[in-house]
Length: 573
Image 1 (tube, rainbow, N blue to C red):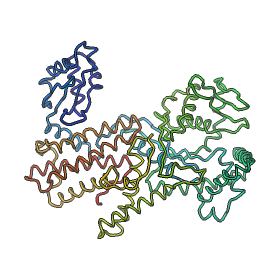
Image 2: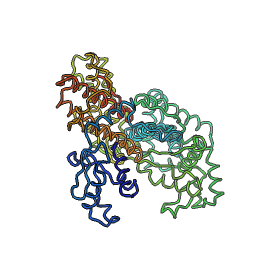
Image 3: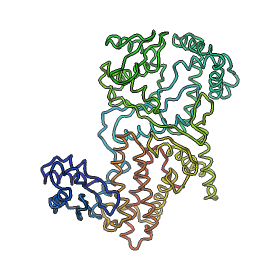
Image 4: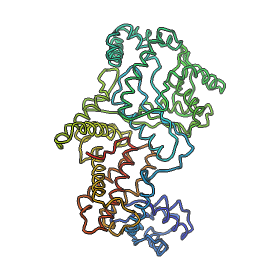
């Protein structure tokens, strides 16, 4: 809350205690009737050797008359509950909002600090299924959060374009591939032969050795294998670009695992010089017993690299290239052990930024019939999911607005349908599994992107009418804030005030859902206000002015939050 810092400062000065003690203790009460800020005094009892209730009474006396915005303070069961002057609160927050313009809660603490966010990272020659969407959409939101606080963000797509699976794919292609099918639909054809490889493997175990041999030849850049691999990669990138364009996602680097293959010898030399490499059954590993981890495999017994060694090489390259402040990996929870090993090897190798490498894990995506797997061939493609979401949205819009022009319906349906999918991936904690429900995703009155977009469009409609009627724009410093002292108005003000903290917490925890929860609550608060108050037809002109300022500010916060989430803010719906 805006006044939290000032209150902590006064409490510290009056008690002689550290300011951060009070800053850490002050909290927002769960209900409005409990105050705007609350200080639980239980945690001070041991240090002050007094009962919590007595401490609260004494602190109440110490702040009396010291804060111009203090309406009253109450002691309730060991809590000191603080109530602010609502009109002054509204004035403070709204003036701050208009001063910040289109970016409320924007920060500058990230200036001159480069943050790398690795996300999406699909495997070439495989379908871009809904599982990839988790990394793609969460990663983009995290990158946006960092940018919003002033960091220089580099978006990295670490393509899965190397590894033994490509030896298997080459083997599968040579056994069962069709040039005609590849030209027609490359990803579908490559996925078909890859799935067939695993099905045939049960009866033909020799295929495993064949795949291993082809990968070894690929590492040696044998012309035939290398050209096939390059063809598969180019075709895949064209398919991926269509998806990224639809999602309006642009990467600063598309360097895949293959890029780092020739940088691994330097990593091996570095680890060997440190005395970290040991032989285990012919392979080269780094023991990580001190970390409670299994040995990290660096080179296989046949000399082939593994993705841990490529990831380690990538870290060194990235730091040399960008001198990163943080190096973030938005990758599924099943890879937790892998990243623990990689980061532990970096520590053992005395890499100074090992602790600045962060794995941001996420859960799985499920429909009613289970989890997706490329090997079984039962994938649900992200493009298909987006197309179905857009089609369902279009039907809803046409049913509700039969007179709307077709071109406008198409444009709105695309934004709302894609936004609904995005929001579904972002609205809950990222490590929770997602179970898709069309009813929930496209509920224009529920916890959904359509609800947020509709609320934003409602605010925009009000402001357009105000402009058409000649009552907008207004000077935000020349309104009577007493007209915004009511409960409905104050609910909106509090959520605007909390927006910056929600951005900071979302950033600190890499949980975009925290910021989304704030703007979702803001949308609900505004709609309660809208349904209980007249805005353009208010009882007098001064009331109308105050409510228009509140509406425009709400619109600004909603747009900022939607932009961070990557969801279109629609002026009309």
